Amino acid sequence: MKDVILQLFFALTPFIFFNIYYRDKIRNYSRSFILISSSICLLLSMSFASSVVGGIIFDVRYVILFFALVYGGIETALILLAEFVIYRVYLGGQGLWAGLTIMAVSFAVSIIFLKAFKNSRRPPLATFVAGIVFSTIPLVITYFFFPYLVTRYLAFHIIVIPVQNCLGIWLAALLVRQVRIR
Image (tube, rainbow, N blue to C red):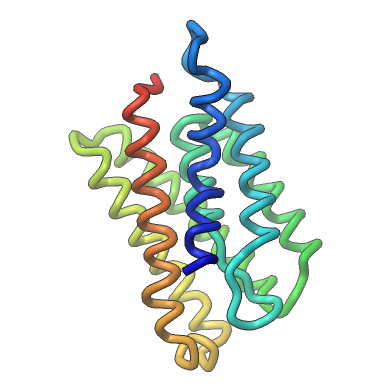
């Protein structure tokens, strides 16, 4: 539970930064603000990730990447993707290739969800569905690379990771919509 709360904090930190920095400003936000706050949160979430086995980490990087894509644009998301790859290679471990594969697939799916999010009449629902998909992708790919770990820690993979991703992405989108970022 402690790891989930910490990861949710990292997912919501850009919103907290936003409220502190842009509270009394005329302009709502900038892409550089989204990039810097999301970059910091990505590094923190990966540095203090959930793990049941050394070298295989789970965090809210998909939530942060989706947030950056929706509010910062494709350029911001590509920079965060590069940051993720560099830092994940630096961290190493047996989950390196699984992590890179998960992120590649998640990034492609994020672009699809971006279009759905922007065209949706109910963005919170689209965001929640994105959270479910971003929870399913790591489960399937991790199972492909490490079936014994997924079955051994099944509760972690089917409860902790989905709660972390679904709740994180839904809360981030809901809070940002409350302050009406345009």
